[in-house]
Length: 80
Image: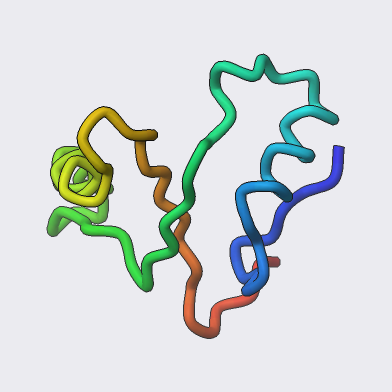
């Protein structure tokens, strides 16, 4: 399975769905929308604050609309 790099700048929902389909993932977990953020909210110890993401996703999603999936794109740190 091909890996999607977190430093990709042109990633979109269609690319992610194709990647998940190739991996045999069920369609019910495929994203319907993608939101790219500069940094994830973190605690002082470095853990991602999921409750902050959930609150932001509720604000971004239209009433009864698709949930929002967050994607982190680091500024200049390549994967090794």
